[in-house]
Length: 497
Ligand code: BES
Ligand code: MN
Ligand code: ZN
Image 1 (spheres, rainbow, N blue to C red):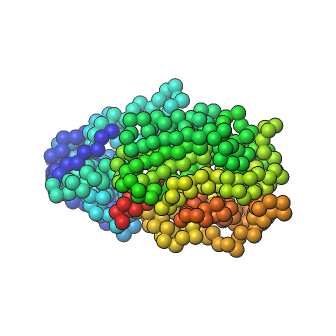
Image 2: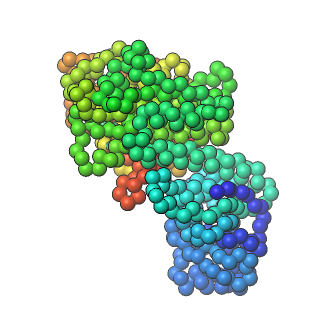
Image 3: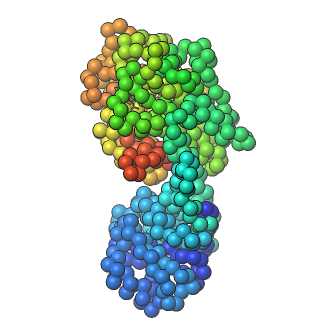
């Protein structure tokens, strides 16, 4: 599906298969009013008769209005004007797409007439692109019978006049880049764990870099990691038939010598818990334990598409956590790449073990900032649910930047503490630290972050716990592609200053 812009188009003269117009709880916008006038009040009469109030998520298809060229109008509720933010607009765009008849080839959308907090008129177009693509996303790779493709070829986004076109194009391109990155993250997350192994992720990274001059990929295997002394990573990977990989993707968009932002993703392609085996119910969802890695790959793709002028290094710590005769056991002590020793008291706290070595490894890039992204703890889901990701950093400035990026990017995060007071909970009688807290589940997301903090002293660091936001369960099961939008927005803001 393509997005195009159309300036100063009269809504009654549109010949496309359908015209999408918004309505807030306060009423129709300009396009709707024009159509109402052209139809001599029929549109508003229909809305009243249907009890359509412009509530968020509501849609109403209206056929054969007199005085119009197009056969179909889709009225989309946008909710209350004062609550209309970027996320609400995105949802309205999703609802509009879902209301489209699959036979329609072209559509003109006036959703850009909505005024949204903290968005210029042109910027709203980025949200519309993202919301539309969110609704259009499918993962049917393994279905014999695929849903017939929505026939929509072009969505034209109406802007007020020619002066809006340039900024509008920029916003559409950015929205597309974010959505492409998010779609890749979704695809990787949704892949089954018998396909999506560590080596599969490495191959995907290589395939992405092929033909992209700005991307460079290097893959370390277990022998390489052995030489680097990554004892914690290897303790996790050991029990699997599938070899672990450390995947390094460099994106050179900025000036030579500009310090990179480094993104480190947890890439556990399946988390059984290891010898500390997880209970069986819902264990299939632990294929999503590589969603941090997927978001890193998604961002690299989004960067290549948007050509953002910045240097970014993406590192994926990919391993499978399996129980086996040679798997790590509770009580094992391993030496990390940093030289610090860890007593593994629970093999299900494996994310921090692969991450700690990756976080030591990335020192070599002399990073401006390091952000790790991980489906790290069930405790984070208990604390924050599935709405916001958990943000952990001792650095107030970085915390502020990430919270702001989450808001602006419609992918919110919420700060949690990483105070030194929690550190003693990680004491071990036999090693420098244990991999789980002696406090049990209390503050589990925080003590996990505190573990990582011991490996990130050499640079400015933040940790995103995405255990709650990375995928949906139940009937809507599927990867969300979060936090690609948050990270893309953060990087965008780094460039914009
Ligand atoms: N991948 C899980 C965290 C997780 C669990 C994410 C459920 C989303 C839903 C992680 O490796 C894990 O098992 N963490 C343990 C840590 C505990 C053993 C200290 C957890 O959260 O129970
Ligand atoms: Mn685990
Ligand atoms: Zn895990």
